[in-house]
Amino acid sequence: MSLPEKKLSILSLQYHCYPDEVGGAWGLTYEVNKRLVARGHDVHLITCKPSEPLPDYETIDGVHFYRIAFRASKNFLSLWLAIRKKVRQISKSGDIDLVHIHNPLIGFMAILLPQLWKIPKVCHFHSSWYDEEKINEVGTENAEISLKLKIKLQWIRIIEGVGYAMSRTIFFLSEYSKNRFLKYYSLTKPNLCLIPGGVNVDDFQPPVSSAAKNSIREKLKLSTDIPLLLTVRRLEQRMGLENLVRSAGILNRRNPGLKFQMVITGKGSLKERLEQLIQQEKVNQCVQLVGLVPRETLPLYFRCADLFVLPTTAIEGFGLVTAEALASGLPVMGTPVGATEEILQQIDRRLLFKNTSPEALAEGIETFLKTPEIFKEMSSRCRHLAETNYSWEQVVKQIEQEFIKVAG
Image 1 (spheres, rainbow, N blue to C red):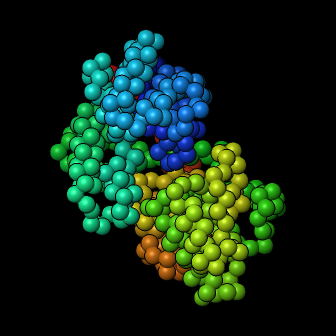
Image 2: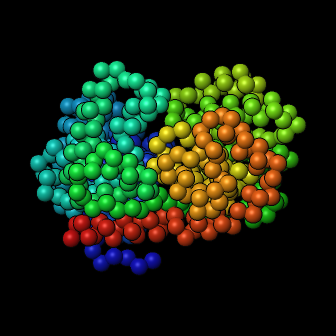
Image 3: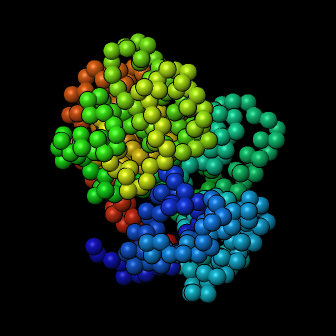
């Protein structure tokens, strides 16, 4: 591994970060930061505690974690004061060369600090906070919203816009994300840089044999005789998991002899709703919610599955789980939402569902269950795409090159 001549001191800003909390943007922040440290840079991360027991400071994989108290993170003024205190603490160890913003709120707070005004900034556009907040509140992008929510969303738009306007470079994970950004912020003129998300291609690998695959299933207490459908998602509104459970019900009623097992991993606010829906649809014999799976165990689920299902209903900026499935040689059937279409059509357009409805999901899954050999033939293409386009080493090297350019 060739290392750069110029070493940077980087201030990374994120609301939560793995391993404190699990999620796509939080995982990306962690993977990028630890690899920047491995390449010789200093990375100081300011993040908020998802719960109080975590220490205020620790080093994880060489990254300096400076955590803001849970209560302080819930108030605008106390959050700003806490960030100011952390920045002063970090500045004592030396000059900061670059500010890397992952979260628009934390980034906005930092931009208000005079000691950071002259330091060059870059921003990672994981998704639109405006869109996320709207969908979390009303369920869909096009629903009517109250005056109170309109005001809140306009403030979010301003906060996001300030961060983008102050950044020299903005990273996008996909063309979809870049176009989404330009829809809202066409007048901002930073450098727009497309660098996809990544995957650890050593951790996520295809099974070495059918016997090894069955051995993993036995270890995870899964059937070795029935096709395994996997999805790994936060249990939240836009992930489309309710539609996925309903599709299982449609399949059971339409083809009771068509056997499958569906495993959904993750945690989130929809847990109880999904449990109720599984009972209502009478699919408890074939659909399992297994909760949050430890990071070291997760590759095993990918390795022993037959199909990964991505049922997202809105704003899929990239989908690290898609890259993880592809690296595992696992075909992904996904809804034609966001970047999923960009990624999957590189392999085969048959991997895309017609739309996001439960009926479309059921139709696509039924095609897989009746003709699994078509999808099995895609396995090598899936792995090749992940190795050539999405390995973390390549992704972080591109980010590093942009950092050096901006800091220079």
